[in-house]
Image (cartoon, rainbow, N blue to C red; front, side):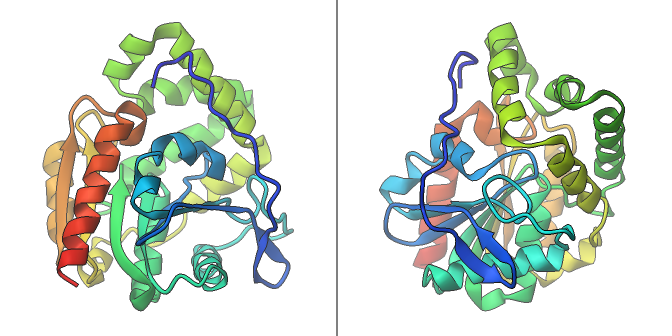
Length: 284
């Protein structure tokens, strides 16, 4: 992704899907075939995925959506719990008549992907966990980072938060290659996709949830961890250790990629996803 690229973050004028009382979600469904559903972390929205799923949609049905209380989905007074976010995933699948799907989680939403797989195992065919926030013991480092992000956001606002996060989350390679134009281009998208309130609520929710590594041993679905070797949270060694906790898990390392590895190499990431889905489908 070169820094000068400007994402098309425009929303389609499509009907929302009602998932539970008072909640209607914005979604996009593109392509045909085996379903792959993308789960936003709290910093990105549904349109953002278009650039990173352009090859997948040629072979699969790709579904993206905005969380409740984020983007173009419903605003409700009470910030949803992880359980409610999981119920929204199922409500969305029901409305789209998708019996089961592969889930792509990224950063904080890898936790949601895990929860949906455990709570609704027959609806999830497999998990693709990009830059997971799951660990072999817990994720103190992730919580500490989140708290510092929250503090920066509350004290100094969105632009300061972005300036702090960029060198932490973006790989050293991409930072050098895309330079100032890359920094500014992504900042524009970052500022457009969320409000300070949405990020505050999302980052606060991320502080909660079960980080127990024991939960991973209960995930029966095939799982691939896609980890940049320049990820701020997990080293490649730890990535392989986390993958080994899953009964049917493996780890794919993307060279010179950061915490959101599809930003560094969209084609490489999609190739890993396609291969994983093909192999998993062959074993069904």
